[in-house]
Structure formats: C-alpha cells, structure tokens
Image (cartoon, rainbow, N blue to C red; front, side, top):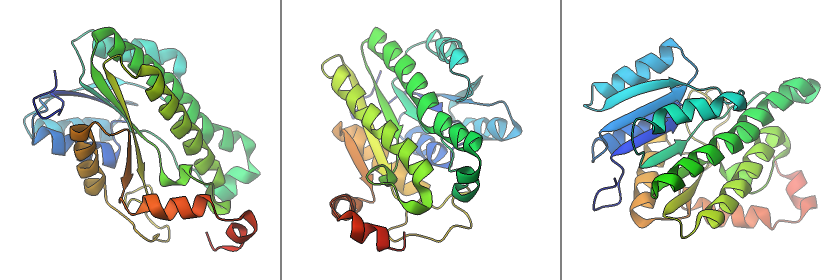
Length: 251
C-alpha cells in the first residue's frame, strides 16, 4: 500500500532499463519503496539495473517482458501481480527510431509504432485491470511533449507518443472513481543515451528532473505532469500555431 504521503511501497517498471525509470526508482527507494520489479527483455543491462537497485536496499526482481509481444504481456504481468499488490506501475518503454531510415523502410516505421503505441496499449490495459482488481494503485505513463504536435523531423516517433498520450488520458477517465490513478508525464528533450548525438532542444531536462516531477505528481495525485513545467505554455503556443508558420520553423 502507499504510505501517508501517497508514495508507493511497491513498483513495477515496464521498460526496466529506461534511464528515466531507473532514476525514478532510485528516488522512490530513497523515500519508501521497498519492492521493485523490472520488466524488460532479458539482458546484461537489465541484470545490472536490478543489481544497482538491490544495492540501494530494495527487493528487486526481474521479469521477461517484450513490448513487441502483446501475446505474452498477460503472463508476464500476471506473474508480478500474483506475488502481491503493486502500488505503482511505471510505463517507461519506447524507442525513438531513425526518422530518415524509417521513412524509407515502412516495416521499420511500423516497428517503432508498435513499440511506442500498440505494445503500450496492451501493457497499460493489463496493468490497469490488475490495479483495479486489487482496488488501488497508480499507473504512470511516460509520453512526450512531442505528443502535442508532431514535427517534420520526428513525426513517426511523435505520432506514436501522441496516440499513447490520448489513450492514457482516456484510460484515466475510464478509471476515475475506481481507486486507480492514471498520471501522464510529458517530458521535453531528456539527456539520455537515446538522445545522445542529437541537437539539444531548449528547456532540455534530465532523468533525475523527470523523477522529481513524478514524485511530486504522485504526492499531488496529478493527472498530467510537464517536465519542465514551462513546457506547458510553450507547447500550447506550438499547438495553436498556424500550420503554414509551423512548417517553416527549423524543428
């Protein structure tokens, strides 16, 4: 169960090697979290991530999970929830892809879309049902500021995040009053391995800053969190910008 401050004692991370997710797990372990499940494709990186959290004092386990295998999601998540209640599910997996390559290779573009949207829809629905069955818990879905308006330079990735963002909002509305809290987190450019080598965008942030925002959002039971907060106004302006103007921006 969550503590008196609304922070989880147990955490399931979908995307167990995500730098943002691991920063969030470390921050929550420093507060009250004692049990952590890292779900991801079996790999040395997943094992190292689990070991790093165990070193902080958390009972950390791994479970095999592949976003591109929705048929296996029920069994993977069922294994976790069979071991006890989960206070927080953090959906943090996703791929950026390579826009230029993916435009030339529709199969690669579909793989990006299936990871970022289809796989996330499957996992979120299964997790939400399990949380609803136990009668409590939060589902935090990492989308992106890119969900507000797809850019020419990144529209394959951005469109998947836009779909996931809309889905998560609708899921939150569907679960309202059930005891299950859904929170959408929209980071801007985050300095991680995934974005290494890309031109840094204004208002760039870090995994640790996103983790801080997630903790604060959980305490407040927020429904939407922007990281950094100033992005809310920036993206509102971008969303309402005339298309002809937006098209000429170097984005």
